[in-house]
Length: 358
Image 1 (cartoon, rainbow, N blue to C red):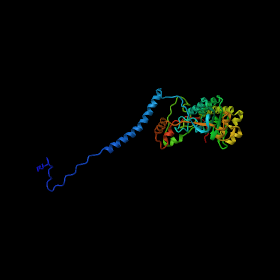
Image 2: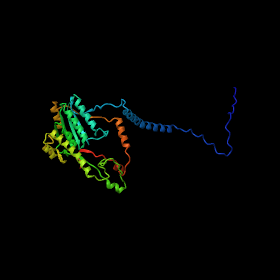
Image 3: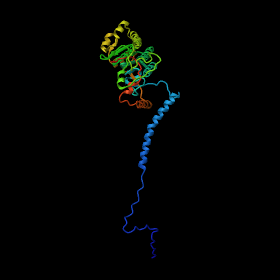
Image 4: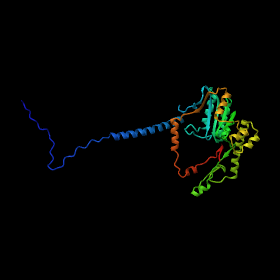
């Protein structure tokens, strides 16, 4: 049997010298996959954060340049309260201060423009047979109250019934807009009244002196900085502001006289700024009936000739991603102000308001 010679291995590794330590094992190869995954995750998160902001700024730029992103007045969604059918009663809810500049992105606090949009939608929708104006508001800006009242009076021209329902509070500007209704309901314990006008100014002249701040003003006329919080009001300034208040008050009285069919002298007697409960207001002729929202809805159905189980809806809208981002950006843009100095030194504008204030 043929035998094969065993060949020695080629280039055998050299033998270490006698007594030397054994050679170290080869270093394992580095696994960078975990590090790459971490960087990938961080990049994805950053991309998710930047893309919406980029879209937001692109949308703002495009909207400001007159592109197709700027749309007409939105169509408000309908949220069913009760009932069924095609013909409906719409509940328009006025909550919080009247005349806010921007919405709160939650759908609870609307701007004047949004309230007017809801009123106009109810006026033009043939399926809407009547509106219940549900008010939970201490009032607000004079101009905003005027504009909402005007929109409600235009709604009345359609012939559709308009019923007002007062909630916890429907005072000052809240009462002002209620006078557009054919009938006003109030809970016996509703806070209403506060019929009148107010301008509130803050004076912090002594505070500025204590903290070492001084306001320097260069003006073209003596009354250019009327109402400045850094100095006392002059007699002339007081006369100017009071004349503005008196003019707005006369307009408020006119609205109550027309809406409630009360003698002007009687309205002036009642409109001294005091608040009334719903029961007191009903006894004074400022409110027609005592009842809750459901009572007002039932009255609206009766006036519209609808059955008891007719559809009742409220207008609502779902905040868009864009509006939520805008709200977040507005919050991020607020500078830190732990001592309140930034807020204190901001220029204040005298506000003419139909508002219940302490």
